[in-house]
Image (cartoon, rainbow, N blue to C red):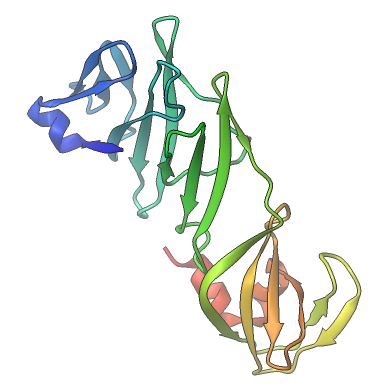
Length: 218
């Protein structure tokens, strides 16, 4: 992926090819980004566009448009040319895309380390007919050791909403192992005793000050 930042657009030297030849990337008088004759609203923040080829050999490339917010959050959208118009690629409702990459094999990887502050979450989405479809995962695992100290006792469950398998002691340390693949309000943790189970993010906010501060930071 070749990033074309707003500075390059201001210099007038950026262009992008979506399959029909290079299109100049410029900024409008209002600060929005113009790709050829197509204009993308920037919303007052800093923005960037990038060209990607999600499925090599299909004769069409795509555009990634990312906007940076005031709290360093990044929101990205993918566009494609259809009938001479720049249209947004459909994605699952509620999916947050702060970073998008592809190897050209017909899918994209969405990496989210801003919203999920305990770890980096990676989603895989297949691409066909202008639509992104999420590939389900059983667990989003942490790539690093994350340990938290809880100030209050809480129940560890066998599964989300399941039976109690252990009760933690105040001021004990737990290790975060990952997040449920389809219910992102449940976290898999391991106690110092070695027992592994599930706790809701709501409960963790109440019993662990560090977790609460991490999730509210930004």
